[in-house]
Each structure stands twice: as C-alpha cells, then as structure tokens.
Amino acid sequence: MLGTGVVSLPYHHPFMVAQRMVQLDYMSRGRAIFGSGPGALPSDAHTMGIDPMLLRDRQDEAMGVIRRLFEAKERFSYKSEWFTLNDAKLQLKPLQKNMEFAVASIVSPSGMTLAGKHEAGILSIGSMTKEGIRALPMQWSFAEESALKHGKTVDRKNWRIVLSWHIAETRELAREQARDGLLKHNNEYTVGTLAGGNGVTFKTGDEAVDAVGFSDESTAVIGTPDDLIARIRQMLELTGGFGTVVGFVHDWANRENMHRSWDLVARYVIPEVNYMLDDYLESNKFVIQNRSTWLRAGEAVASKIRDNERALAAAQVDEDRGRMILRSGDRLTPGVANLAQEDQPENRK
Image (cartoon, rainbow, N blue to C red; front, side, top):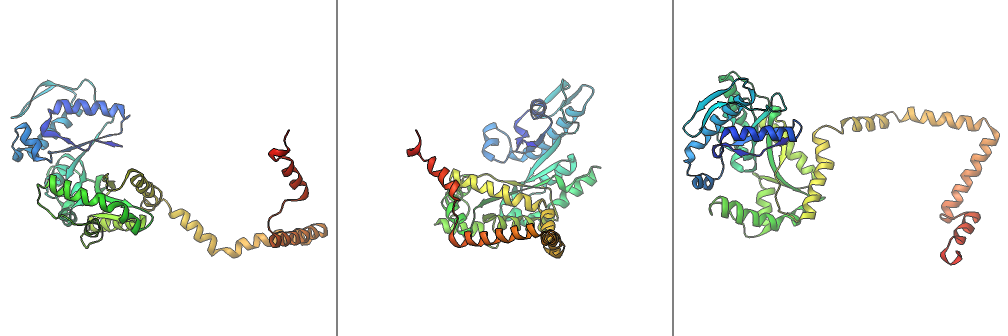
C-alpha cells in the first residue's frame, strides 16, 4: 500500500485533494491510502494566516466532504467558512471501491476521535515520545467511543504505530553507529528547532543513546534485531493490539549503516513478528524429536549393502579410502593432477 503521510487538510481545498488522491490511486493501481492531519507545525498555520484553534475542526469537515466526493453519484454544493463547492462531482472516482482513510494521532484524543467518526485508520506518531507512549493504552477507547456514537466501526488492524530504531549486529555496534547522529538530531532539530529550545539536550552521544534507547522510558530501539522484536511485542501488550509497525526514517547513522539497519529488520524482524518462521521451527523440532524414524531409513540402505558381497566390499574400500584422505589432506588423483598441471598458463601454447 502507498500512504500519504500526511496531507494537512486545513491548508488545501478538499476538491483539489480529492482529485489528487484519485490520480494517485490510479497511478498506484488501487493501493493508495489517504492519510491526513490537521497540520502539525504552528509556523505553517502562521504563514497562511490560519488560527491553530481551527485546524482540527477543519480537518474533520474536509474529511467528510472528500468522502462524499468519492462516493457521490449526483452533484452537490457545500458552503463552509473556508471553502465553497458549487455543483461538485468528480469526473473519475477512485480505482478502489473504498479507499482507506487514515489520520495522524499524537497524544490528544482528536485523531482517534476522527478515526472513529470517519471509520478511518490511525497513524500513531506519538508513540515516539514518552508522553505518547504513556497515552497509548487508552487511545483506542477514544476511537471506539467515537465510532459507536456515529454508527461506524473501527478495526485494530488499521492502527499503525510509528517507532524509531537503529539496528546492528550487536548493541555496542548500534550505539557506536547512532550516537553522534542521535545527539545532533535531538539537540539541534527536536529540541532546538521543533521545540524552540524547550526540552532535554545531551552533552555526549552516549548520554543521548542511554536516555533514548536504554532508559526505563526509552522512545527508540538502539540494538539488535532481537531487541526490536522484544519492543514490538511489548507495544502489542501495552496497546492491546494493533495492525502495523511503521519505521521512522532518520539519519542518525551514515548511509551504509542505515541501509544495513533496514536490511537486518527485513531479514530477521519482519519474519519473526509476522509468524512467518513458525512452520519452519515446528518442522525442525519434528525432525529432531523423531530421529529414530529417520535412522530406520538409513538402516534400510545398510541392510541392502550387507546383503550384497560386492557392494559390501566396495563400501569397505570407500571407507578405507576416506580415512586415508582425511589423514593426508585433500589430494588430487594422479590423473587429475596431470590435467591440472597441463592447464597451467606456462604449459599453454
């Protein structure tokens, strides 16, 4: 699936957003997910002259209109304090019969409430902060209550949890690769830019790694694939269940190590948390526990050899020859040795 993460609806006319999503749905062959948010940066609202207090209500209003545009068979008009539709109808509907809507959620009940009202999925961005993690256990109840109020349903399989990580073969290696980038990301971007200087800054990379990845309220995984698997299972227990983990891409490590981190996740974490290895592990256990059965097959072969004098003699010769080769090391037979010598560059004409 291909999700827009996310369209800040109060900054766009709903009709134009609907048209763009239809185009994206056809370009992706029906795999588009319409992700929306109210607009996270106050600086954007300031630039456009919009009161931040209006953003969430406008997102709600726009979602309803866009859904109506996707489904309407007849033209309709709609007048709002911030946009107008006159005889509106899309010339082309989405390729999907029911394109999935998804809303961003941080800490407040707003995102979850919208998800319940509009029967949308959720992208929980707040799971990367201490406050957001503390709020997760009760977040789903807001969606369920809102869905019940509006006669809709919500499904946990459409709840996506965002996590940060840097993965390496060992915890020590992960620390070494991520510490300098994490220090800069936290001090200069998270605190210095987004929070306007309000927040915890660190003096060293190791201090940053300890706080972010190894404290009691860690907000990221800096370690091995097993550490990330454990964290995902911990989050499943904390939330009561969700559908998808979304990895947050950052530049804590250099490009090579970042790619290696994602490769380790693909190789070891994804198969494990999706139970893709269960049948392999069960099969391996079955073979070990039924060793006597498989030995019986070997005995059947041996019995046929014992019943044939020539085969028995040949087996003895092969066994003796094998012992000799093991004692003397791997050696080519004379014929093969001669061929090898003849094939040397100095012997070629």
